[in-house]
Amino acid sequence: MFEKTELLPPDPILGLSKIFREDPRENKIDLGVGVFRTQAGITPIMAAVKEAQQIVVNSETTKAYTPADGAPGFADNILKLLLGEDSVAYREGYCSAVQTPGGCGALRLAGEMLARSEIGGLTVGSPTWANHIPLLSAAGISIHTIPYYDTAKSEINFDAFIEGVRKLGPKDVLLLHGCCHNPTGADLSEDQINQLIEIALERGFLPFIDTAYHGFAKGLEKDAWIVRQMVERLPEVLVSYSCSKNFGLYRERTGALIFKGKTAERTKALHSQAISIARGIYSMPPAHGGAIVNEILSSTELTAMWKQELEAMRSLVVDNRNQLVSVARSTSLGNRLDFIGDQHGMFSLLPISNETVEKLRVEQAVYAVGGGRINVCGVNESNINRLVDVLAAVIV
Ligand SMILES: Cc1ncc(COP(=O)(O)O)c(C=O)c1O
Image (cartoon, rainbow, N blue to C red; front, side, top):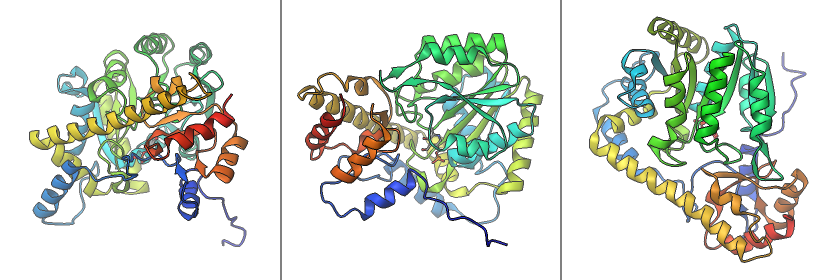
């Protein structure tokens, strides 16, 4: 059966972490994998998560199956968190959510739903997160790319992006990043989002907003703006949501697929399809992470604690960005890295080639992802000067 099965290369991002771990050089710098880290290089378990987890463990009485849409209460709490409790679409049943195995699970489930719809194709801005295209094309939908970011200029190429968007029609889906664009860190402005909504109303395409960093850009409320606006003003919207980063639940595989249908009845139909498709793939999502998130979001105290911790993580990322900019300014780089200070989330894209990325790893033990993506969480007091010197030698 498997005699001709080929050996595949490791995943470009996860594979890099392995090479990093095995690198014996003491001055190595990890700007690769996409997890939050403190200055000490730790990805902590949030205190609110620890407390909620204990409550879940103590109160659990069975390991029997959970409902198909996940840990009880989880989906509803995520909807309230993202849309706001006053959202008309939420209150009137136009929106619904199912728990999924992480944001990846939500993306894939959406891909499977789209593959069973009247979809023409799914359009993504380029570059996008390295896993988007493999994940979604594996569901059998055709993917098209349009320009999003000009790496040499370190800014969004909005004219080219919007030109591509204007060509979309009612059978098209446009994948957007909720905030903290991966890999560029460059998010659309409110004005640009408004323009997108106008075009979506005119052309009829379906926006699909991948929200993996809610709370990491400008805070929970502001980061939800794109989803809230689109849900309020457009007839149909898809959202994939990840709790990996903002709850630090990476390995618990906790996320959600959220849909807004044209009517409450349409939404119920979408919900039923999602559950049925999930049943044919993984049956139901793991319960633990969903139960933890539900515990936090159902408690005023734990929610306040979690929000405070998330805000602390967010400001650490902002500090790291500002530090990089300021140290770079004291070198020959001048204001060349200023764009990093204006961007959001953990990632930015350095204006360097794949050959340079490789050279940085081999010669300097500086690990960035192919395409030039860096995770600013890998920058700390003890490595920032060497890092900036190394970058000054390769960025012109
Ligand atoms: C843009 C984007 N979407 C989705 C995900 C998926 O997250 P999860 O780990 O919850 O599957 C990630 C994770 O890195 C991401 O960066």
